[in-house]
Length: 436
Ligand code: GLY
Image (tube, rainbow, N blue to C red; front, side, top):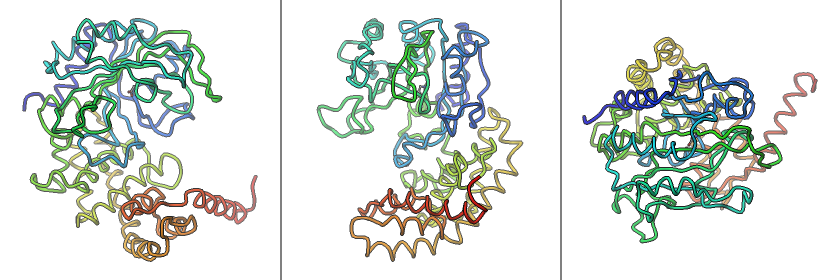
C-alpha cells in the first residue's frame, strides 16, 4: 500500500506541529457545554469558545484528528464517499494566520508532504450570496490560489457551497475555501457543465482548507462580527486515503476494507447494504464507546437509528446480525491504537449492540409485514398515524419508514407523525401525574 491511514494521520499532524501548531487529543463525540449540538460533527465543534473569544486557547495555532458524526447525508451512505462517522484532520488559527497562509499550508502539504497530483485539483471560494449581503466575495483567497492554480480551476460559488457553519443552530461561521480532486469523467454525470458544485461523484471534496471564522450567527439569523479573525480547516481522513491509496471508494481503503470483509467477500464491494452496515457499525461502535447508548431521546436516538438501519440492511443482504459483533471487534482492532477508549469500552459496545439488535430484530419482521399492509392503502402518502404506529409498536424510526417508503415512491406525512408523537407524549405525561 502506497501510504497507510496511520501514516496519513502522522504526516498531517507532524506537518502542522512543525509549523507551530499544538497537537490536541480528539475530544469525545459528546459535546461539552454546548446545547446547540447533539454530537460533535466537526473538528471545530469542541473549540467553539476559542473562536468566540470566550476562552483563551492554549496556543493560537492548533491541530488534531477529531472523531466526528454527521447524519445529515445518511441517505447517501453507500455511494463512494459519504459517511456517518469520520475522522477530521484539522488545523486552526485562533486570531493568528488568515486566508493566504491557510491556502499556502494546504498547497504545501498536498504537494510536498503527500505528493498529490495537483493537475487534478480545483479550489472553490465564496463568491458572495444574497443570503449574506454583508459578507463580500472572498477575493483574498482567490488571489492566494492564483499563485498555484490556473484561474479556470478556481471556482466562485455561493453560500450553499462556500459558507460554512455554524456547527449547531448558532455559533461561529464564515466563508470558506475548499479543495476538490477531479476523479475524471467516468466518475460523474458526464455533463459538460459538471464542476465542483455538481452533486455527482466526479469532483471529490478533500479539504475545507479554511473556514474564515469572522462571524457569529445568532438565534435570530443575524450575523455579527467576531472579535478575532480565525481559520478552521478540516480534511476527511477517509477521502485522503481514497486518493492516496489509489482506490475507487472509501470501502477499499485500509480504514474500512477490513470491516467490509466481515460482511462480504472482496468481489461484493458495491453492495449498498454491505457498505451501509460497514459505515454504520463503525459509527455505532465509536458512539457507544463514548457513552451514547441506544434509546429514544436526543443523541441516543441517533445511534439507535443507525443500528436499526444497519439491521434492516442485514436483513436485505441476508446477513446474520452476529456479524455485527464481529464487525465491532474489527473496528476496535483497527482504531484502538489511535482511540484507546475503544479497548476500554469493547465489552459495553458488544452488549449494547447485542441488546439493540435482539430487541429490534424481533420486531423487524412484524414491522416490515405491517408496512406491506400500509403500502397499498397509502397511494402517495403514508399517514402520520400509520408511521407513528410503526414507531410505537415496532420501533421503526421515522427515517427508516421514510427510506423504505421512498423505495416505493411514497412519502410520509411527517406533520401528522409529529402530531401523533406530541399526543403520545402528552398521554405519557398525564399518566405520570401531569406536567411539573
Ligand atoms: N469545520 C469545517 C468543516 O467541517 O468542513
